Amino acid sequence: MTIARPPFSASHSVGLGKYFKSAFLYHWNLLALLGTAGFAVLSFPGAFLPVVAAAEIAYLGLLGTHPKYQRYVDAQAAKAARSASSLSNQQDLERITKSLPKDSLARFEKLRAQCVELRQIASELHHPGTGVLDATLDSFQMSGLDRLLWIYLRLLYTQFALARFLQRTNRDQIQQDITVLEKKVGEAPSGSDNQQAQRVHKALQDNLETSRNRLVNWNKAMNNYELVKLELDRLENKIRSLSEMAVNRQEPDFISGQVDQVASSMVETERTMNDLQFATGLETMQDEPPELLRARVVH
Image (cartoon, rainbow, N blue to C red; front, side):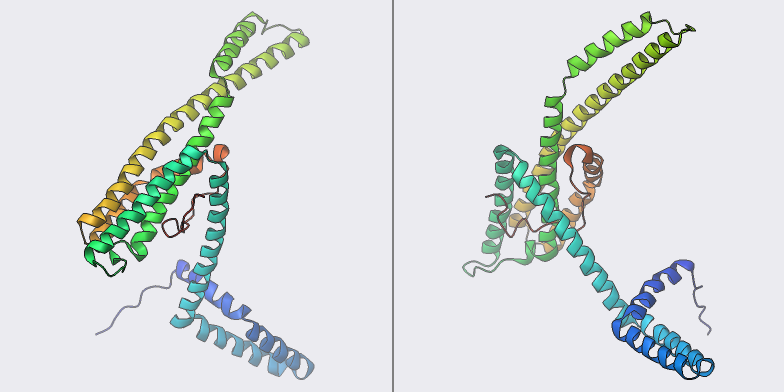
């Protein structure tokens, strides 16, 4: 029976490229390659250089396609990505905790503390008197809750930033400016051959357009502010529900699935927060959230 081999796709070639590159840039390989190439050039280039090239190609092909080496390269890339993500998240966390008003920080800490307390209760119910933490909210389940708490904290900061923007921008004043400018544009001669009159009309029209854009931005910020308030309430309720579920249902797989389901439902919320970077200054949401359940964040 003949088994058909899958075609060698371009995407597969690109995927192998990173392994070949890593193998080539390995410091011992570069040292050996430069040494042997230098010896070949100084002795018999025509005879030895093809041998050196063939040996290098064989080395790259052997190491670059080896599953164990590929897993090593992937693990190193993932580790670097996590480190970069962790640094970015830590910087955002410090900025948030330093900037948020006390009532917002207290709101977050109350929710976080309840998650920790309910996790402890779940453990004590399942292992009374042992002090052992139950696996119900361990490992990846905790990571899922950390992500939800991280989204919640960023939402609090987004709400704070939008509220500050709205307070500093007077909508009524913008509307008054539009009314005045519309009147001036209507009174200014637009079809005049006088260049000065044309420049005046153009300046007024441009100023009017700018004011209208400011009003659109203000309305959009207000809509986003109301949406963030609703999302905060929704997510807070979801997180409390997941924590309480750990007490009532000792089913790690079910709880993990519920955490993933809630996290998936927040994709649009994350996209909204990313779109509001102009107001918050926060980096794009990273895959690795900071550990919020294991350590006290608010001091």
